Length: 434
Ligand code: ADP
Image (cartoon, rainbow, N blue to C red; front, side, top):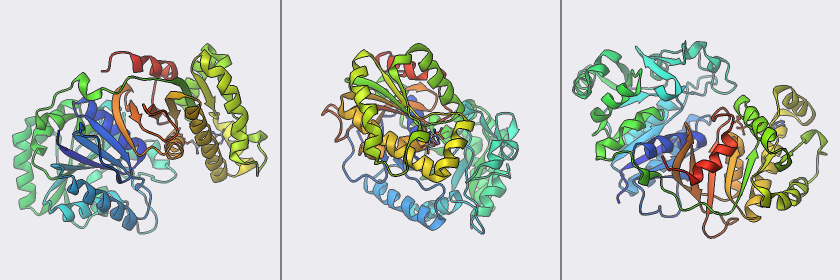
């Protein structure tokens, strides 16, 4: 099987979200943590290279993205997809207007690509674009919670102007009326925009139907830039259809565990649900009881001793998940950055310890927590399997800490998943694959 689509994602859980959409639409996908240093499995036809470039300096984001592109070009991928957040998250600081524009233009230059699209639309996740304006649910991006985001505050919902502020090239719009007419109309509109000197177009999409109409018009575009939504319509351009085979992973083996460092509301509900049903199988970490210089291994040791006994009774949950008030108290005692970093280190050490104890099916809750756990487990590539809940698939990876058969892993970003996610996830691993 040849590698058809090469993707560059600007963050880790965003990469998984994109990979998940591609698998659901019929592709065999591997996600790599950074630019791969070892060969990919031969049976995949798309790869998503996960970077952490969303909120770094634009020059660094460009360099990392070009390094990823060079590797993708060496694999002779047919199309390149630059994936960013469906809320178009752009880092603002002083003169810096965000990384999406600079990375897009650097990739266009490197690929000699005369025209590309920019659309974060992801209707399944209530992100729609109308007349170039991004809506989050029922409100404009600039009226959504994103206006107060600590790193990437989005105060303008007009993506044509947001993107134009980040680009040297001219930015235009392919509006919903054109998209509704289908691929031929979109292709004509692209020619019209190019004749006007426009090289990048924001594309409206209000529904998955719009994305499916847009898909065929993107077939020969060397570079696409988008959220994960556009991906649902791409595999069909290579004649691929949704199939259980694309999500097939090796059989799951080993003990089951959940490690949760997410304090998001959805995770709080999932922890509460697990505690209600399996109170004896859960261990809560209390950072207020930690003294400043206790080594991470010492903090993890009693948890792992407890887990060694409990794992034979069913899945165990180790969590630091807490509500906003508790988190505030911890941050007041340890400092905001230190509290987060220390907890991530402890949870990652525990995740590694659990895998060494024979855990072969691991759920991790929290974006940053997932990054720390994957790093501790030295995972560099993940085969993407079936979706548990929107945006959260099971994955299979190899790790020096795991058995030779590898490890099944799911990485849940904070606000994803239904309240029963922690129990449902293990049931899904043994259930139907799509
Ligand atoms: P989410 O995806 O929900 O945002 P993350 O893992 O990305 O979850 O972020 C949660 C952050 O909160 C991490 O840095 C984690 O270490 C930190 N954290 C977890 N539990 C606590 C706690 N009880 N007190 C303070 N910080 C915590």
